[in-house]
Image 1 (cartoon, one colour):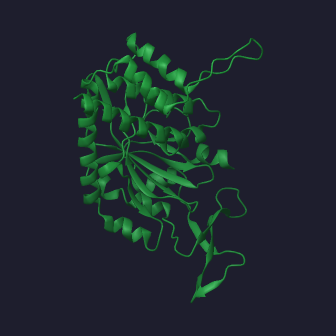
Image 2 (cartoon, rainbow, N blue to C red):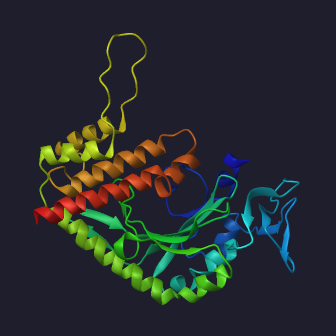
Image 3 (cartoon, helix red, strand yellow):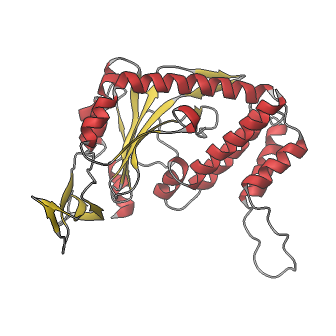
Length: 329
């Protein structure tokens, strides 16, 4: 079931995503229509777990977190056992968070769906602002995600995407690189609403302006070969040279792929180039996204790019590269 859920339920506006999954929807899609088209019009239930101990009136120490059956499923799909403090955010509540932003014309729905059996649900909207870094066109997005597996928080993050290569330039929202997040505890839906869309848009505008400033700095700062080599060594393990001739050739490591991408950029294969830290950052994001996209399971690749190891490395790379560009400025 895990692989089928996203294949059958994801919805998107415009061209098909790189993983070729999902159903197309019109550009003016509403929140209610997006939920239905994305197949996310199901609820998460919280019931006392087997053997749970009553700790108060109608309160137990452990609960069973599950998704109600959809399609041909005969039974609910269990996600996790959670404590009495946990409270889910229903999918319709997550979409409602976007309503005022969409109605105000500040953003338009881009894609929505669920990963695996529905443990992670996301809504992505394209913002009305634009960004140019040299000859690069950057499309800014807001990605809201909520987890139904008892882990993580309701999070919103700023995810610019390079139009020319479609690689994601992770950039965390908020001061000090913090992501805008709300924990899954009591009255989470009310706290999401109380957080205020104006407050989120203020933080988002600050993140946009910060990203523009940081990216401009990277594009204006030369990157020496020695500094680039040292940075790549910090991010990736340098492969051990293979000895002997037995066995099939191994696939190139991420360390090797980044260096190969930098060579291509120096040959003019990418408008980001490779002489500045902007080019180096894009070499890293391109390789991370390409490696994830090449996985056999599109769901795993998407999860890795947005929420997993690829996202973590890209954010770390941006932090390190921005520090180096700042020191040189």
